[in-house]
Image 1 (cartoon, rainbow, N blue to C red):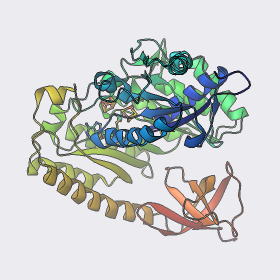
Image 2 (cartoon, helix red, strand yellow):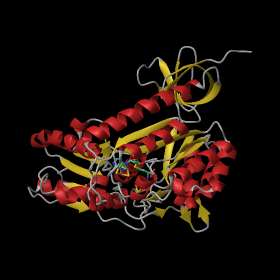
Image 3 (cartoon, helix red, strand yellow):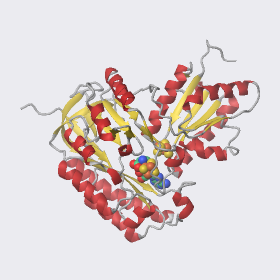
Image 4 (cartoon, rainbow, N blue to C red):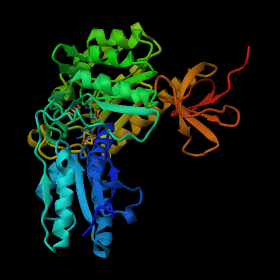
Length: 449
Ligand code: SAH
Ligand code: SF4
Ligand code: F3S
């Protein structure tokens, strides 16, 4: 039996979006309060947790692959395995298949119960029983407003301002895995922003599946982001993702005029075809999307726009794909995440439509769009050549510790030689851009004039 002098070591792996990264910080905080100790080494852990994503088939497969790797570890020593996050809901039904392996399942609204579930699972293992811990009920109220996340980064902090999603885009599993939309008390959010600033963080990203439906009493998202951007010490505020159907002019004004709110908007398009957009339940048209982009760019021509696109949704014809291709070609996003449609169990599309675009055609369309977007991103990034821009230093470049890495206001990665430009993570420095690829800006010390 583990005693207080031999703490239980937990290894936590996170898959999926920033919301999941944030939730892992909540999980670490809740479990540390309960005496658990976290380790980066899987081999040392008494408990292995996976915070999972269910958005596409390959996200699922990744988790199954990691789970099967744990089988061997579990044969060698006592080990509690927990699956958290968006897949926990789906896994509930498949638990019988993987029963010997998974001891605890906890959905995104059940993390307060996690320490108890894990202790019960450990006790049950010690007693030679095989009791599973299951907490997958979704809540209409849980916002973890009183839990202070256990943050690692030092420069960038996230705050989930709302949870869940009520949009029910027909392809998307999120409304089922994360439940109903609910917003967190703004006072708590602003207080958290002050604490984050005092801890030395420089950037806050406000998170929600659908941030522009944030509403708490009289507060809307514009008021919230402005209040956060006004917190002394916070140099940059970002948000993700707004829905193009209801982008309020006041939010746009705040982005354009507030110096601390980054001039960058992620605006998920999904498709350029009106018929697809109706089937997807996105509630805007190609024209409305283009009008919104024009409105944004008229107010601020240098704004960085990025997007998400799905290729090969149910019944998408060549001509309908061509409409997406044209829109991307004409809109010239700075970057785009381009996905093959992946049918998700229980969604409206899975129930009502047929996933009838072949894998080959989906791949072809993703490749064509990706090639187009890469060229556009290259040209867009080369617009920065010879410009001197402010860069928030994050740390070392992935490829070499001799290079520094940071982000532009538009969230584009910037790299430079550390020996010529000394800096610390969290510094805001001015750098001159001398080269650019489709993903990266290369910078040097600005010329003295
Ligand atoms: N709430 C966010 C989206 C989160 S999911 C928003 O609306 O902006 C991130 C992206 O995954 C979506 O924008 C969509 O492009 C993609 N996606 C979601 N479900 C998918 C599916 N079933 N197949 C392929 N891509 C999907
Ligand atoms: Fe999914 Fe649509 Fe909600 Fe985004 S807005 S999480 S795509 S249902
Ligand atoms: Fe995020 Fe994946 Fe869930 S994208 S909301 S972790 S399904």
